Structure formats: structure tokens, C-alpha cells
Image (cartoon, rainbow, N blue to C red; front, side, top):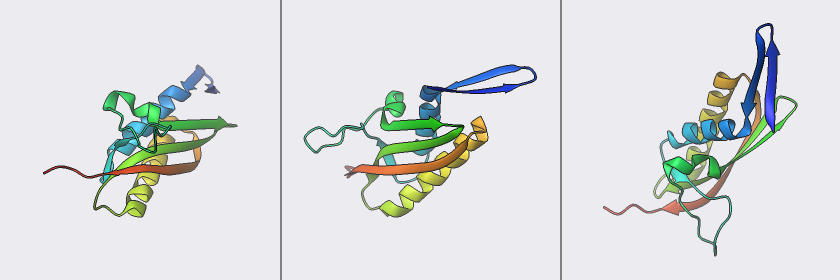
Length: 119
């Protein structure tokens, strides 16, 4: 599915894959987020995705110029999960609305795991 906009100069078509990539890039910039997780858990373990697979941890639903985004994330141990989630929600909503002009009606966060870093 794509979003189509039209103005006096022509048509603008935005793909869901681009929207997912934009959401993934915006999310990964937030403090406390280790990375995106695969949408499917394997044996109860979340798979951490690399930077080239950010869109695999994002699900985009576009209906009537209204956008809903589901993000599957892994957070850093020691951070407050609700604060990280709210920061990610706000960053993704702001970024998508600013760059695409679409109305973001919801950003849902699914915390798939917590990562303990080795020192």
C-alpha cells in the first residue's frame, strides 16, 4: 500500500517501506534504545536487527491518510522503559509528520527485550 498525494504540479507517492525506514531511523536515534527487534520471537528470544534491517522491526498501517506505526524494540538495561518508549513515540510521530505531511494517529511500542551491555 502506498500513500498518494496530489497537488498542482503532479502526484507524490510514498511507499510503506519508506515510512517504515523513516520510523526506524528516527527511533534508533533515541537514548536507551539498543536497536530494533524482529517482529517474531524465536523461542521467546528477541533477535536484534542491524542498522540495515531497521524497517523489519516496524509495521506501518496506512488508512485514509492516517498512519499507525508499531515498533518492536530492544532497550538498554538500566533505563526506564516507559521513558524510553515515550521518547521513541514522540520522535517517530514528529519525524513522520514533519517529513511526509501525513497525520500519525498512533505509535505503538512493543518492547521485545532488554540488553545488558558488556563492559
